[in-house]
Length: 322
Image (cartoon, rainbow, N blue to C red; front, side, top):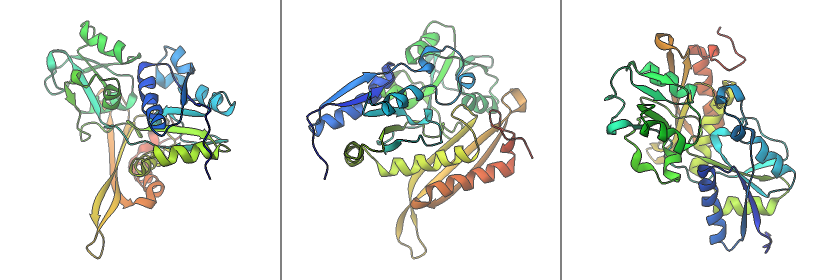
């Protein structure tokens, strides 16, 4: 039986506006259940570095939070799920995956323009190799430049005229109340999002069973959990990190079984970019459907298909093309 304590649940988070907004949604759910909370800000190596994400490596935004959790400084850690390494962390458990925000990418461009309306030569900023590759593969003649910084900084580069447009996660803009600045929500047919984009991961210690059960009972969303599990299983099987040029999007969809009854299944689409420069970009695509309990297997199956197509040459992995 879960015990109720008057002690506040200490929730660890990065200090950015977006991270605090994300954590606030979890805190609000706990407070609605009558549980006091305390939000603890933790500085991470990723926050302190200005280097491109691809150079810093996987886990730069999550390692400090996990260390604070394992050390007992906090009781719960809230992450952007796409920032988490795919390997599990000993001593920690994924207690909850809340309902996902819209996972698509979004364009914020000068003069209210869409991607198709940007003139050739327009300068578009993004820090993600996945976005860079897919933008170049569209063949629009855009100049893609790498950028870092928070949402305000990136949008500010458009407002100042330094850039013609930036591409950001729509979910982040929704969480900080800036959706009104989006000039186009990009169709996944043009650009698949990062695996787990728009989803949060809520971790606690494996020995803190009460907190785990509490979070699972009031925060967890099964459809989001299984969809993201499929996406991340694909990422893991490709041996690609969060900065690799890999996109994935899974959805729980209604389908008909062999007897004609309506059932829920997982539909997964994946892309992997081989090369990220100009005409050398090749986008490999695959898709499949499986039963909800087969999320991990579905991700691995799709990864195997992408590898057969040539994804073994992905930059940023230990693989070489076969």
